[in-house]
Length: 120
Image (cartoon, rainbow, N blue to C red; front, side, top):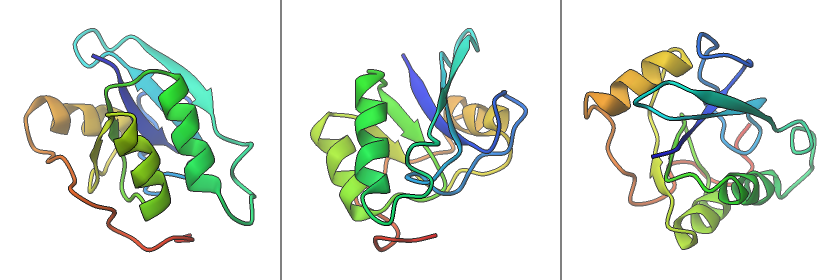
């Protein structure tokens, strides 16, 4: 399984970024081995619109099974769901904390976006 976790930094000890589309980084991690890769999201940070859609395409291109983030807007949610990616919002702490929340069954799969578009 491959998870994508929104992150403010380049490591597992970085804080989870609560924003999906404008997250600084995505940490793509195997929750069993904790092997990970860092994907920069700087191309989407300053877009006036469409950051969530573009970030969603980035996640789809990395063939992850699930996304862990703080919040996800409606357009990004639609892109991710149409690709079969499970979305879990409401996570917090560090990337490692979010993965532990996932492994412990503390995160639920979201049925819909939890913020309006253009949330900053």
